[in-house]
Length: 224
Image 1: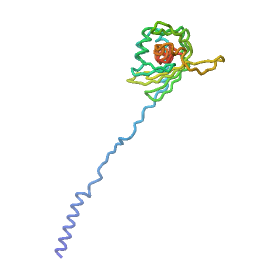
Image 2: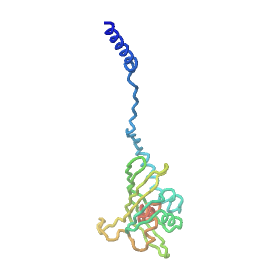
Image 3: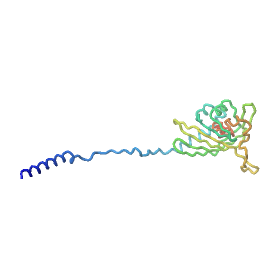
Image 4: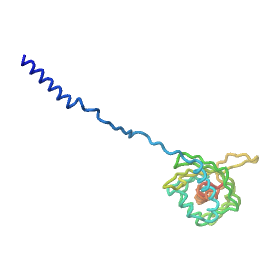
């Protein structure tokens, strides 16, 4: 009997000890952080972006007229690529050279039909039309090319370090038949093959000259 009571007593002591060690321990607080939760990007201010990019595009005629190469250097990205009306390609260096030298000129350079497609806070696409009257481009051989006409162009913008810059652009001349309707033409530019410089000039690129000239470089991209 005593032995039985001893066993029961020891069992109770062991149970109480175990309960004291584990039974009273409450659930450990858990902290969970969803590291995979996607952070929603702020909604782009479309109106503000549209206003800023239209301001840049509408300034091309002034840039061309005043030979403001510093504006071209600021607005065009160093790695920008441009496609001219005749299918050739150009870059920022050519645009800067054409603007500084005054190779591009026009009696009238009008920018119209601007449309801004905002992709997100740091990228957008701008399309438009340029009407050039009395436009001329002085080529490296000293000859002058007539770049008067109407052009449609498109520029791709990226915002880098808070500054909007053209990273790509292309333009094409609007060809019209006898009835004023567009007509297909093997050569999209008024004189695409007139000279390689004609393509590099602001007439073809989306640069300030893009709108100033009917080619596709920055200066030509916006140009007619």
